[in-house]
Structures are given as structure tokens and as C-alpha cells.
Image 1 (spheres, rainbow, N blue to C red):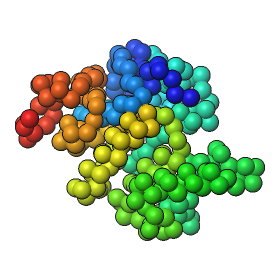
Image 2 (image 1 turned 90 degrees about the vertical axis):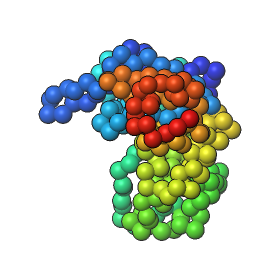
Image 3 (image 1 turned 135 degrees about the vertical axis):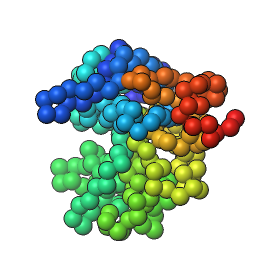
Image 4 (image 1 turned 45 degrees about the vertical axis):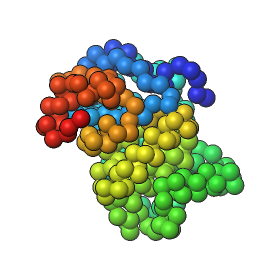
Length: 250
């Protein structure tokens, strides 16, 4: 249930990863609040920690220190099924499956609503069809995943998040494989979903021109820190200007 409290709250949080028993800290002392209705983009250079931040908020990476609070609840106190009702995530990795169609994949967003025989209700089927329609996948819904272009596959992953109906959506570079007009359509769609559905949508991207045009807030990742900015603050930020390489004029 969505409340008037912050959608996402980071409290003295450190993010990183462990590999071969070695822990590497990527982002330190993170303290921000994001609200329902916010369309927030995460920007920064490659390897700065954007994906690590999203995966940690989704509960896929253990937090190194501090707290992640989603809709008033510390995610450490939630089971994976409980967390999946609050947060959905779309990653960049391509997923395949034997005879798995676009429709099947989007339907996974409603899998928790299925009965003991893994059957979906008419209401769930309506939700799935609506998500497919919103992402303009109707004519592709019966194609196998490995038959989809990179752009269509990315839209399929986004549709799955929509079908999951979570108040918080996390998307890792969702526009990476889309053509120019589709990039704008996607960002406009996400902005409208944040406002009309009162969702908190957090997107990592390198599309700095789209960031300024569509988002409400910006998380700029730099030197192991995160900086929460409004669009107007970003236009005055030396860090943003440096990230753009001087190729964006205001």
C-alpha cells in the first residue's frame, strides 16, 4: 500500500559487492529520500556504481552498511515475495527460455497472483494485456524471446515490471537499444506512469538530454558519492557539465 511517506529512503548506506571473498565498496554514506510520483534518473560514468545502486535497492545485492527503507519498511525485514510486491526491476541482461514468449515473460509479473495450478485470473490476464499494450508489444506478444530485437526485448522487460504493479520501479539503462523516437516515447511513458500511477520510478541512463527534458529529480553518481539534484540544479552543476563533456547547452 502506498503511503505519504518517502518511497525510497537511504540512511547512511554503503553499497558495493563481494567477489572471491573480497568486498569492494562502490558508494558510501548515501542519504536521500525519493517520493511517490517522482521520476528519477541515475547518471554517472560507466563503472561509477549506478547498477550497483539499483540492484541493492531491489535486494539483489546485500547492502554493506546502513539502511534501505521502502515505503516505511527496512528491506532487510522483508522476504523476497514481500519485496517483490513493492519493487520491480528491469536489468540489461538478456534472458532466454525454451519456448518462452513475450506474453509468457510479461505474465511473470503476475505469477504471485496465480492459483495452486499456476492459472491466472481474468483480472491478471487483463493487467498483462494492458502492460503489453502500453509498451506497444501487442503484435509481438506471441513471438519467442530469442526472436525479439534488443529493443523489443527491453520493452518486454519493462512490460513485465508494469504487470507486476509495484509502487517502485527500477530500470537499468532501459533506452540503451532503442531508436531515437522510441527513447523519447519510453521516457515520456515513464514520466506519465510516475505521475498518473503515483509510482516512484528510478532509471539509470546515459541519455542526458532526455534526463533534462523528462525527469523530476537526478541522482548524479561521482567519486563514490551520490548527489540528489533538481533539473535546475543540474543545469548549474559543474559535475553535470563535466559528465556531459560540454556537449549539452542549456
